[in-house]
Image 1 (cartoon, rainbow, N blue to C red):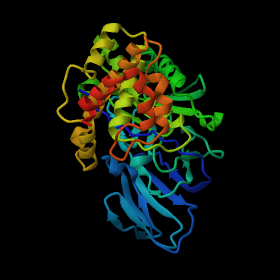
Image 2: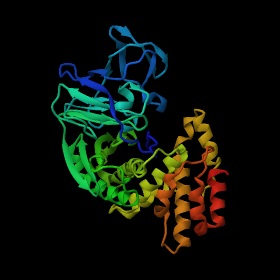
Image 3: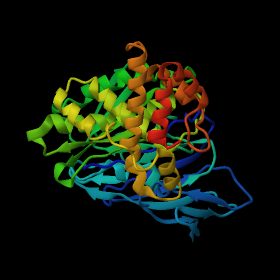
Image 4: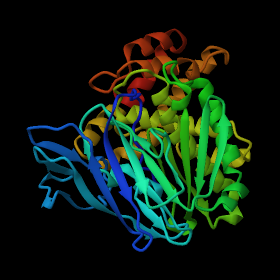
Length: 426
């Protein structure tokens, strides 16, 4: 069994004027206590709200004692603090959990300190207080020399995306490598560079990114400097039961299984599927020039199906790929509830339905893709219609965009309505 905690990113956050600035101070004498400050935000005569975005996603806060001057910030509700009128600087500490290699589940999106390798992973959704708004912020890290973010700002500074997708940063004694893959430049940080190389993870990722970039090329308004990605490889012991991933604006975290030497192909296939799932989220966001509203069932199901479809393009053993696909793609099963009903439950706070977005959602998209391929004698597939699917908002009830449905109906006919009833419940 394995787990995910991914962020739905089917929108593109455009570059805005840089606004507030974060500074993270690191002390080698106390590596688990990072000091953070927020300055340079616009002045206001009214109280405002500072949010820790990860709490609304089910993540755990790592903030300690946020305050302005010497006054503690008031907590208005979980994950939200009051920024008093006239406050010019907010400070807090971040508890970076001390860990060893093989113990970090990237789905939890924690800020951690790797005590054996002496480097840190900073997670924005659990560690940085954010002001509402569309402006991009900047971040600097003092006290260490080597540091890596997804996108550089001014010298010695990194960009912090506006509302929406999170971001992750690595600093300390980093094992860093770089690669140009199609239109993207990629930086890799690994907790165990030798093991990552032995598993050929960078090469597998390059193949996956190359495939996805062909069907989801970056929007024309994204400059070359914006096409930069950060991949952080985090090993997790197989005894912990699974692997996860987390997609950010331009960075993402990907677990790979450690201690699975007797079944390397199976564990590597799992890693690649998770990685491709996360990569799909990012490239989908970069493929359109505006924010698109989509329900969780669609975003997660689509990303998971393309994680599996990308996996099928790899050189991994066919039997391992088939086993993994069979765990999710199950057209013989009749769903108990439609995806639209599951979406309503999810919005009402029922997180137990989330895994069904992967299995039932991925099966729906697989069946749509199958119809398109069969009825076109393999001349068309869902790949061809992705740009249209990602260009429009879904309906308020979570149904597919009308233009997308109109475009595929000539190939799918009445069979499409059968799928909509079976999987969506409409």
